[in-house]
Length: 361
Image (cartoon, rainbow, N blue to C red):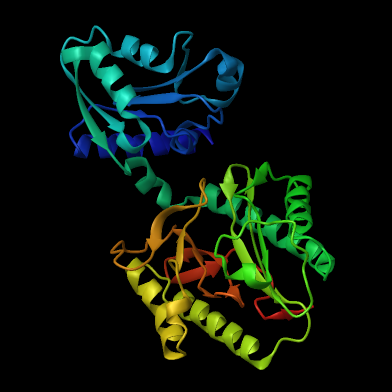
């Protein structure tokens, strides 16, 4: 991994040179993990042309030295910003310093200005490291395949427990417990189990509601394994599904297949979204699709690119995205199917491998 971290830092330095800044203060923890491997909850990474310095607090002094081998480690007893100011103080000329504007509160920015005065020219930026993260390298793809495989295995284990009378919370707890038992550091997000009318809530968190016969149940879950996320959704029906439910499910599945078929380098993200919506539109169901078709996936469960309307980003080999069309009918329930896919030079390959047909339990 040391060589990979060095490559990532070098790619960032090349970006800084193109942007005509001399250093970047990285404060978003997923970005710090990506660049140097640090997994603590308190840190800042100062990336300069000839060095990188990780600043953390005394709780992580041992951990940082164990994890980080491509940057100097500095332990800040008096606060991260004080340590950053100390590193930059005394420079002979004014430094052009970029910082992650979305992850530095105004109060902290003002504190930097107060401490450094005219020694730095501050520039707030957004998405620089995230743009690098969007293209997964071979190591990242290996980790994401393993994360997806773990989540798929847990689904096969939990499926026999899905029956009338079981509470949503019980099933969510089983999923999260089994993911951890299989090696995950935790769920990628709060596991969703939404049954009956609650299945019409796209992000319906699990409750004490008991599953009942003749209703839809939406499951949305994912694991964090070795720092990388998976994200799947499956919908089941408890009993024999009526014809209209089976038809709706088939339409959602066709929408997913249409979006999936669009995945290849050079295609605009909005075109993938439009492919799913066009299928739903033909069947009069587009108004029940209330979110985007998918999103990037990686260290965080929501990354670039977004597969949504008016998103002009062009797909590239190495992007990993979800494809997750759904319909949500108030008072009746919802249907969503979600898989993780890696964009390749010639198309896309799935990372998730559990049946996509409607399961009638």
